Image 1: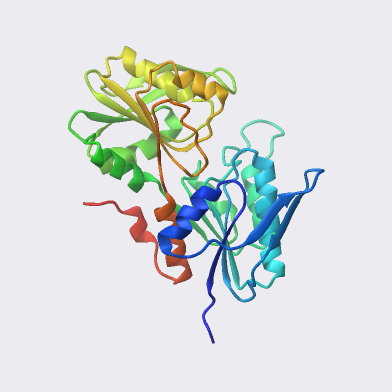
Image 2 (image 1 turned 30 degrees about the vertical axis):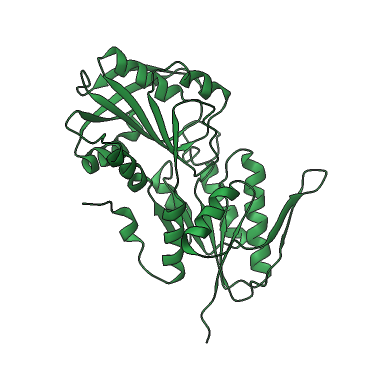
Length: 317
């Protein structure tokens, strides 16, 4: 029996990443029509034969979130109805991940709902990166391959000679301590934390600092930022406590107008992020690192039934 061929398709959320990802492993991006009717309904047509093939569909559920989510669901359904052998949904950024628990009366757990929708549409496997909460993997009743952007950030830190005895990795809130601790261990740096109090959905107030940051170069690490309120307040607090420089490494930068205005205040020397979603630096000190090779290699290994554990390692560790 002939082994299934590898086919990769993409929605409209981040086609440049999809094209770069395909180029990194020498596989052409599949031909598919993904458009909208005048009333806003999404339309999908896969323009290649995928019967019996190993199909990967790449789509970040970023702004406009609901539209891109529907594109993903419809593409999965189209591939399933075209008799694809296996369908893997590749989500460099998994939207709705922050709604992962019932923390107030009468609110949904939308991250679980989205997982149910993706499985119901026909996905057999998930490939994603830096989930807001790792337990979201358990929301799926299908295999989930969860990648980390840390090797990409580590390479950038090494190339720019940032990893030295003067570096301290800081979590901008309590929830990110585990991630910050992993980065600190990886980079041989000390660990710190900012305790914050959220005053509204878009504003936070930094309250206290744990760890020594005076005379140090600070690297704030987080998985996602949208309004940059947490990061900028943490950076401001670092400055007030004597930090020499403040950089931030964020896996997913969903930057809106409010975020750009805050970054213009200058408390953050450099915002380092990935192209998991499209990012426009707008002339600000924003460095966008590519995760195309990381995702591409993961797709190649999944297709060939190889382990992806090696993708979590960085040079020298």
